[in-house]
Image 1 (tube, rainbow, N blue to C red):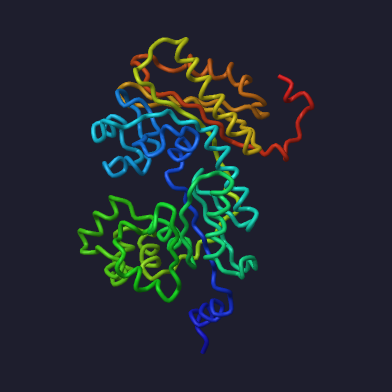
Image 2: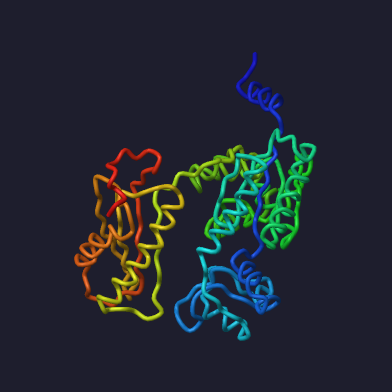
Amino acid sequence: MTTSNDIKSLIQDTQPQRKIIHLDMDAFYASVEQRDNPQLRGRPLVVGGDPSGRGVVAAASYEIRKFGVRSAMSCYEAKRRCPEAIFVRPRFEVYRQVSQQIRDIMLSLTDLVEPLSLDEAYLDVTGIKAHHGSATLMANWLRAQIYEQTQLRASAGVSFNKMLAKIASDINKPNGIAVITPDQADAFIATLPIERFHGIGKATAKRLHEMGIYTGADLRAAPVDTLEYEFGKRGRFYSEIAHGNDNRPVKAERKHKSVGSETTFRDNLRDTANLLVQIFEQNADAFEQLSKKGRLGHTITLKIKYADFTQITRSHTLNTPFPSAESAHYWLQKLFADVPRHLPIRLVGVTYSNLTSLDDLNTQPDLFGL
C-alpha cells in the first residue's frame, strides 16, 4: 500500500533540486557613504544619529565592528566603545536608489527575486540556463556586476533552501561566497549553534538552552511533541529546519500593507509649530516611499510617543486615496489637535495603509490636481 509519505518522496524525487541564492550587501549604508566620500574610507564609521542624544546605529563599517559596534546599538554606546568613531546621518533616498540598481541586476537574471530589505534578497535560480546552470557561477556573476555598476561589495550564500542560503551568505563575509550542497547539509546543520537558525531569537535560544539544546544535532534529536508543547506551531518549524527542511518559496512580490516613516527627537518637543513641521516631514517621506511602490493610501495614521515611552495613534480614512503628501496636511493637523499634550513628545510618525495600486485606480481625472 502506498502511503502519503511515499507519494511525497516520489514527488520530491521527480522535481528538480531547488537552487536558492541569498545576496547580502556588505555594511550597505556605511559602504555607500565610504564610496561617496573618500575621506571616510578605512575609517571607523557609524551611519546613525547623534552620539550625544538618542540616536541609534543604522549601519556600522567593518572598521568599527572590531570595537563591538553593531546595528541597533545606541550611538552613545558606539561612541563610548570607539571614541574615534565618525558619525554621519543616513541618506535613505540615496540608499533606495542604489538598492534599485542592485534589484535591476538581480531581475536581469531571474524574475524570482524576493527583497527582504534594501540590502538583501533571495533569488530562485532553479532551471536558469545561464552560466551553465550553476547557481554558484550565477552568484559570483551577480557580485561582479554589482561591484562593476555600483562599486559596492556583496556576499552570497547558495543552497537548496532559503534558510541554508541565508546562513551561508554570512559565512565568508565580507565580499565572500559560501555554498552548502545537499550532501553537506546534515553535517553542517548538526554543528550549527541554534542561534544561527532562521527564526530563533534570543528569547527562544535561551529557552532551548534551558532544555539542553545548543546545536542543530540537539534540536534534531528533540521530540517534535516536546517542541510543539514549548513553542506551539513554531516548534514543528524548528524541528523541520533542524532536518534541513525548508520548503518556503521565493516570493517575487511582497504586498505592502502599510508604508510609514518616523523620527525620534534628540530633545523632547512641546512646541506645536515645531511638532507639525516634523510631522509634515515624516509625511513627505512616507508618501515618497509609497509613490515609488506605485501605491496610494486611503488611511493615514499619526503616531505619537511621549517622554515616558507611552504612545498613541490617531487615524483617518478617506473614500478616495490621498493624492499627494500635501493633501494629508489638513487631516494630520486635525489628528494632532486630538492628541493629549500632557507630556513632552519624543517621537512622531506617519503611516499610510489601506493601500491601492495606481494601476487599479478608477478615479476622477482631477484626483492628482490638488
